[in-house]
Length: 93
Image (cartoon, rainbow, N blue to C red):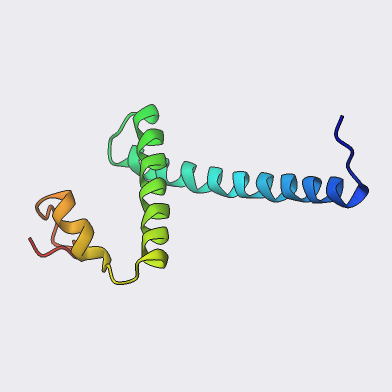
């Protein structure tokens, strides 16, 4: 049996409350992004999956930007995503 003192127990409880707040925040973001995909005509399940994918890509881009700031987002992302689809796109392909 592992013994814990009250400080360790408090740390775990604090971590759980922070985790729960992050979960609520990400849920709000995911639902908002999914709603936008639904307005574009995607079915709800597909819209939710695309929202998770979008958030994952965004989080990954933030990590890359912090870890390797030499990369400029458009120079890395634009060639990977293919030709420009709209006039408002920042990609110049």
